Image 1 (cartoon, rainbow, N blue to C red):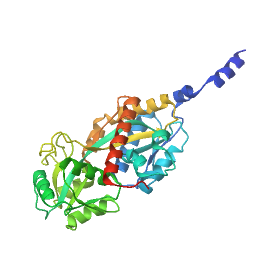
Image 2: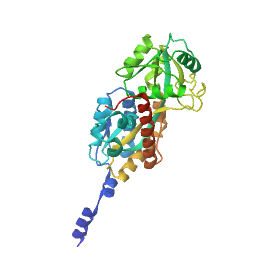
Image 3: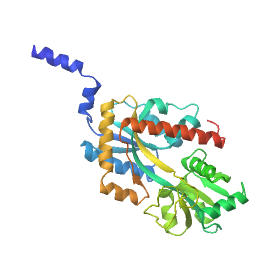
Image 4: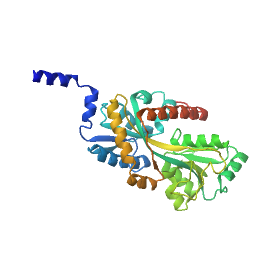
Length: 319
């Protein structure tokens, strides 16, 4: 009779039971970028913290390419047991409006577990560019609509769409010059071949500190510790302006909720450490978190709507 009861209990065990034994072994955290970039840095810090919190090794797997589609698709198609995760950013909110034929549906096949980090954008210019403040920049751009060039990491990239959102807020029009990646764009800005770039703090901090480019303003609500001398765009006259680049943790949408919650709790606990805060500060990053799975999902849905509007306004046609 006891054997029969044991067998019955095993067959009765559904996803909540699996979640109780999660994780079952080493986990994989897919970073949809090549090693060495900002998202890779965040992923490696997160993997260390999840390893500590979950008691299982979390291995970073870099799968770059196709604007993060390759790595993201790998997670969307993965077994929904929480053992395979994704760290990605605002491109997750861009996908629906940028692509007609994705191999996955970001809204249906993936679920955001928690925010991981936020960082502001920095309005940067080449050293020979005349404006020294955001107000001066606005005045010049309005006097010369469509003449001042700005660079981005490519059409539909985070730096491109974030820039367009800023120009809308400033009421100016600039000439877009897309590059293939942030690094060559910043290099040409430093060389004086182009005039303006609106990029993340991590992408610009080194060049700013070395004096090769100048920062006019940061997009956060308050000044950041890595460049306290740079005023916010809001305090420069663009009232209530705030914009941040974000990174979050995702899993396949069919992952049991209890497993998602365990991952969320582990990530939040790890990211709250002083060690993480210190590491993030070196890159102009702030740890971020979501109070619940529902809050995380509401955030993602709001971002998808916002960026769809920006993409439509830029005239980018879905590919």
